Image (cartoon, rainbow, N blue to C red; front, top):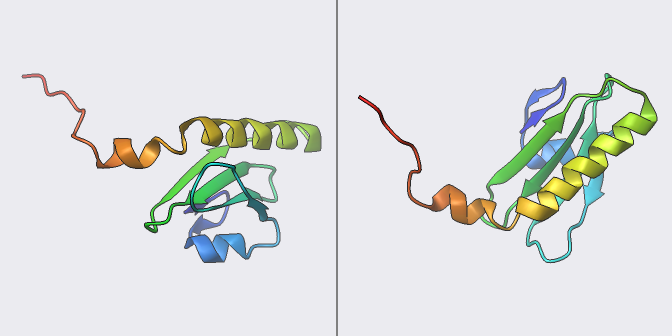
Length: 99
């Protein structure tokens, strides 16, 4: 998982960070976490039951109020797309090739 400012880590190590808070979303199987780094970047990560992880990050140009707003936006986005991600990720390749 690309955690703001911390490089790539496993879900368990990210969930154990001091800046991490558990995230629960009704209707989604798995477990989640909200993370904020020292520079104010916010991220959410969701580990699906099969071990795959979706993570999203937003930078923050404001203070605490902006950081909380970014966390709400990321959580809202995850609620909207989270259940569709595994189906789309395992579906057919949707890329197009041009000569």
